[in-house]
Structures are given as C-alpha cells and as structure tokens.
Image 1 (cartoon, helix red, strand yellow):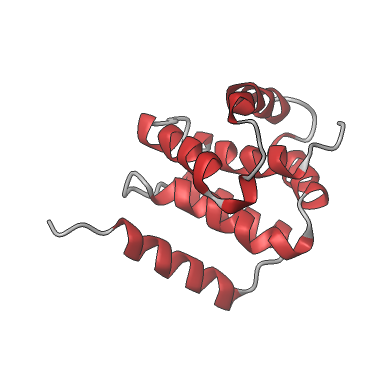
Image 2 (cartoon, one colour):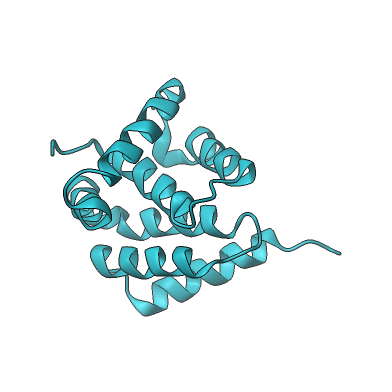
Length: 137
C-alpha cells in the first residue's frame, strides 16, 4: 500500500471510526465534513477531495491488512506530534450521534494503541468532546 498524505490518513481514521459499526450516519458524515472544513490542521486542504478519500479508505479496509494495515499506514503518515489530534478527530466522529457502540469503542482502543496516545491525554480529549456535545435538554 502506498503511504497516504497526513490529511488523507486523518480522514481515513475518521471514516474508519464512523464505519466501524457498519452504520455511517448522516450526522457522522456531516461531522467529518465539518472537521475538514473548520479545524486548522486542514487549512489549505481541498475539501472537494473528501468523498474520493473516503471511498479510498473503504477500499483499503477491504484489502490485505484491513483495519490493522490502515492503522499502521496512518501512524506512519501522521506526524507523531499530531497523534493526539488524530485521536481527537476520531473521537469527535464517534460521539457526534451521542451513541457509542462496541465496534466504535474497539476502533478507538486500537487507535489509541497504534498512535501511542497516553491515558491522561485520552481522558482529556474524551471529557472535552463529551462536554462540547451536551445540550440543555
């Protein structure tokens, strides 16, 4: 497998998290688009490429190595100082529909392990993301 760009790898991780429960909801897809359009890490990225990259991710998930292969590629493509950002993006997508299925939890666990995100950082990311998604009702 050819090494993706850092932007592609970040998108792969979000798509993989969303697809893990075999139900990519419209809310999750919209959040991926929102992250790509609004997070500073994607400045200069052509968001018109998003659909093609998501389709490429789906293909790669079905190739040799599957999810583990994709996680390994992402770890190589994303600079180490951005591994926590990658986890934050994936967690953002997983929590946007206010439901966390076992498959999503497993993908997040694998992602933490592959990217070597420490427990304190994981806890901080998860707490702030959950707080951001709360509503008054």
